[in-house]
Image (tube, rainbow, N blue to C red):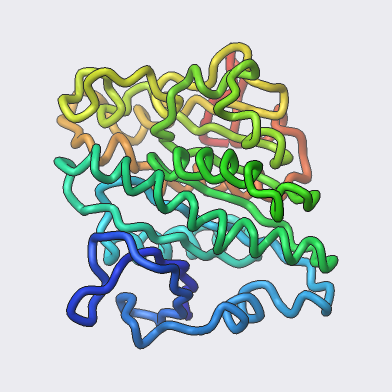
Length: 310
């Protein structure tokens, strides 16, 4: 099956590089890594993923935005894993990925963070504005955003920037579900009183934050992250988050599959969600939106919503 990727990586010696570049739309064949040979036009990309706007096609589309320290080969592998496992969990819509130039090494955290701010503008120009234009034509596609780690930061920056663009702001646009997974976003910035996330909340139907208290990548003592505030991917949402936001504590589920009595790699505690069948079942229920967040069968309340085997 072909994979659809929006890439903002630059080109060096005919290959995708680890530096930012212009946005390209890719249709990557099965078992292949992305290359320039897979580039297609924006129009072809839209028509194959969403359908022709005038046809009033109503589909679900999930856009996955990866985090820092991710090579392009790792991104395409995760994209395919998400697509397969979401489909097995009952999701029948399309999955595409927004690929940005993370350096592929943990030591480049701060540089990746800087690049994330830059590519957020491209997410606005070449994804959000594209969707806003489709909404204006009457397209009824349900767009969902799934962000891992720094991907959540990119979405927040992109939504804030979109509200500063008159051409986009004057369109009554919104996405359906935003799902943060191990989000590298300051918990305090997700408050209802914080101006940093006003645009984020204003332009979505629901925001679900999946977090793991045992996430060692997001610990404050991490030398690459000195001085950062507690992250939503580790401590959850603040108590004064808007009512449309919901936090799902995945700590108990993580411990069931990864006992702390055994050595656990940082990367495992940060990305284990994408190998967990219960997470995908919960995510599929969330994207469908057919039942209330309080009664999704993969969750329990004691005293907060938690991801459990159900």
